[in-house]
Image (cartoon, rainbow, N blue to C red; front, side, top):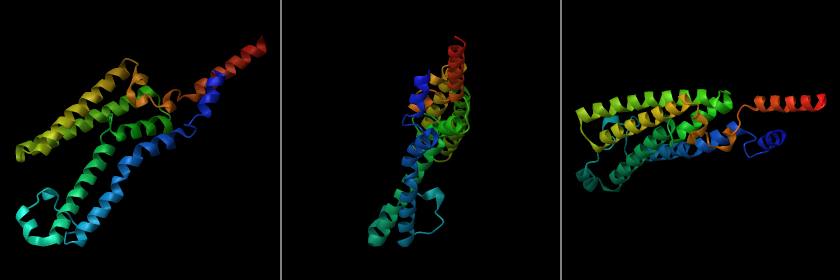
Length: 210
């Protein structure tokens, strides 16, 4: 036990929260400066600062042919901005595996706030189910208003999100949260160091009595 405690403190997770959280969020947050760059380029070539949210993906081919290079660059820029915005929100706001938002949430709950794996699993699963329900209703509304591939993808994403949330919830209820892929990082092998320290003190006391 004493050897395991030393290995835990000297491992690559010696600052577990910062290592796990920063590594997890680095990829998704890289879309933020990219999105800002494409947004600035869009404005530079004639776009408005306030984007027309309901028609971001509507590109008029005839206007592209007649508008010249500026119109083409503006169209490319707005498409790139939308893609980066979607990737940023998808990765950070969907709290289920394999999206980084789930790992970031677990890192905050377990490594920052000190919650147990079971409690973190319950919170993550519940949030995943609720987010899935929200995405489902948005996708269903878009299907009814304007049936597109995007609305179908949203419905599919919502089903996956809710399924993953229910699966994690079942594992948590069965006491198997530690076996879920979200908790397989080395820094989750033993998050309650106080328990280990108590075992070490107990061993020392037994040795002193003997």
